[in-house]
Every structure is written in structure tokens, then in C-alpha cells.
Picture 1 (tube, rainbow, N blue to C red):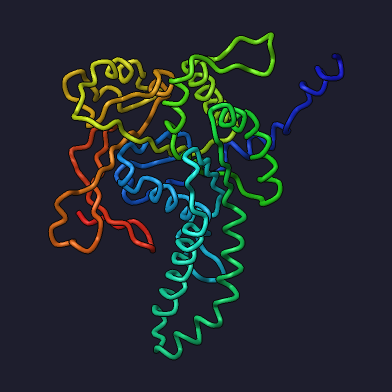
Picture 2: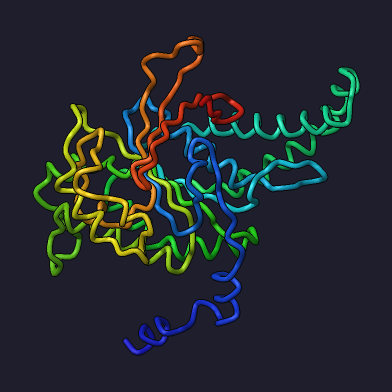
Length: 338
């Protein structure tokens, strides 16, 4: 028993290492279509929308921007040069699609670099052949920075969060960079299964069973603890419940409970000026997690002049912006149309 207590008290890092980690530069992550609000580590962004609204693709593009370097071998890639962790709760992540999109971004930057120096077509093709080994090397480097975890139920998700601190430390030691982005797709994947179960029997008989609210509170608590030790930007998707618009009377009190210190936008929310385009179903523990930037994504049913491309709409719910962004999704990224 004494040896276990001593092991628990052993420090994970020195004070200098802690200060180096916490006081490092925290760059902004301005990603279309989330470019209107300056996103930084510590923010929690919730992307809400139907299954066809390209939420997962936005997460993928955010991850690619995170793992790409800002500058590599004289070519500007516009990335952050950090690691990204993708927790797949939907269990539908397509790694082949992810690798294709990453290759598109790498080749686009390389081709853009050759076009800036005024290369002819033959010179450009020769430049591409010369850059191919470098592109493959960069692709391998970026894939090492992309950390993927798949969870099949809430207990696995909670266990992952509880052990994530040690994994992030190990990845930092191996790759020399911090995890800058935590992506969760989708946070409500197990909600209805958990709700249908009366309780969660645990392996230990001397511990009480966990109900839906207990599991949600534990998940939120672990995420908060993780952000205290490993400052990251958290982005989570959530599928909507089908139906008409619902009043936010039961949600407004959650917004107003946030202090100006925790959330500078809370003073802009009142009981009469906010109506969600969907019905909230997540437990109060998740709603109270200081969601700094919840936004709603949906299909644009009237495509107009962009008949050949799928058009999506994004509306910021907090901070409550009046603008409505239209964007389209392509292999090379997400592009704002208006």
C-alpha cells in the first residue's frame, strides 16, 4: 500500500517542464468556415447539424491544418506543426479518405510553390517529380502526428479520457510536439443507447452502477482535467434530433450561469434572443461545459449558381453573430462562398 502511495506522489514533470508546456505560444486556429471567431486552445467548439452537413469533413480539415507544418523545406504549407487526436465515437472514420485529403493539401502547396517561380508545364512536371520523395516524407511525418482512437461505447470513451494524459505525454516525448487539437466525432453517438439502458453495471461489485447523467458528468470532468494539463482546442460534432425549431427556455439558464470570466460572450445571451434550430438532448453536464463556440451546420437547399457542388450553411449560436456563412467542401479544403 505504501509503495502505491509513493508511486502516486512521484511527479510527472518538473516545474520548468510544466512552465515550458503551459506558457508556450498558443497560435490561433482560423479555419473556414470557423474563421469568424478566433479559436484558441482551451476553447470547446460544438458543431451541430444533420448527418449530411459535412461536420466530420470540417474536423478532418482542421486536423490536417494542425498536423501540416507552417514551412517545410522552403515550401509554405500554412499548418501549425502540432499533433491532433481524433476520437471516433461514430466508428465510421475513413482513413483512406483522410490520407487522400492530406495528399491533396501537400500537393497543392507544392504546386503553388512551383507556379510562383514561373515554371512552364514541363518544368512544373519535373519539379513535381523532384518533390515527390519530399512529399512522401512529409506525408509520413504528418500521419505520425495524427493520433486516432476508436471507442465502441461510453465506458471505452471514459477509459480513453482517463488514460489520455499519459498517452499525450508519451506522444510528446516521441514526436517532440504537443497535441494541439482534440476532435470528438460524435459526442452524442452513445446517448440513445445509454439512455435506453437503466444503468451501467461495472466489473467491481463494490461500486455503484452508473446512470446516463453520471457517465456524462464523468466524461465532462475528465475533459476539463485534461485541458488543465494539456491546453488544446476541442472540437466535437453532434447530430441533431429531427423536428422543428425548439425554444431554448431550458437551455438559457445554462448560458446565463457562465460568468464573464469563463465566457465573455455570456452577457449577450438573453431568454428572448436565442432560439436553437434543433432540440437539445445531451445531458446538462455537457451543456454546462462552457461551450465557447456552439454553431449549427446545415444543407443549403437552394444551391443557386452552384448546382454542381453541395452547399452548406453555418450559423454561430455563441457568440450570436448575425452573419450566415455559405461554404462548399472540396478535396483541397473548405471554401467560403459568401
